[in-house]
Amino acid sequence: MQTFIFGIYPYIALSVLVIGSIARYERDPFTWKSSSSQLLRRKQLILGSVLFHIGVLTIFFGHIVGLLTPLALVEMAGISLATKQILAIIVGGAGAAAALTGGFILLHRRLYDPRIRATSSTMDIVILSLLLFQLILGTLSIFVSLQHLDGGEMVKFIKWAQAIFMFDSRAASYTEGTSWIFTVHIFTGLTIFVLFPFSRLVHLVSGFAAPVRFLLTRPGYQIVRSRRQSPLPHRGGGLASKAKASGNRPVAGPAE
Image: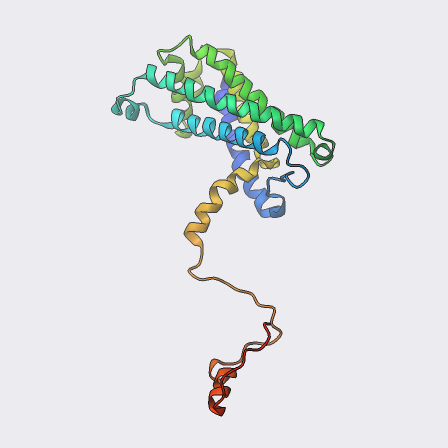
């Protein structure tokens, strides 16, 4: 199980995440949305959504930076492993508190509001519940990390994460001897990656990609579509030109 969870399952999860997302976007582009329920009822949505998204994004980027930054760069920056560990606990704990508060608000709204429940799919409830379970696991893992403030446990997972992207066959061995809660935490996170293409979580990709695509590929002009039944007359033969030829001032006609 150690080899499967830490050495094989990451590649399965990442492959399903990438290939499944591309296939969904190409096959069913109109399902690529967040399916917002704001029009049905705004109650609890704003507070829960803001707290949840801020917390989750803080944790996500914290994990990306914390796990994928080479240890050599951390040392060059003059940051000790103990400092990095404490910083991860503080930032991760704050993000988890915000995400859990917002997540429970959203889950309560989705389960106990009849209108929202009627429009919620099974996957909506499953993925939100799984995210909350993952957040609880991450919060509990803080208590284990507090017993290893030297950063030793953290280094194991940094080496593991970087080994996965370097296709290092020894990746699973770097996590030997770690607490069971980290194993469950990693397994649950990878499972969320597997379910990602089949849930509303795909809107997160649009949230990051759309602004970049807009800035890089937008044309340098504005396209305007008109409802006119016939094209406008040539500039040289319009009302102004005819009025000038007759010596009269042009009279504005009704707006079309």
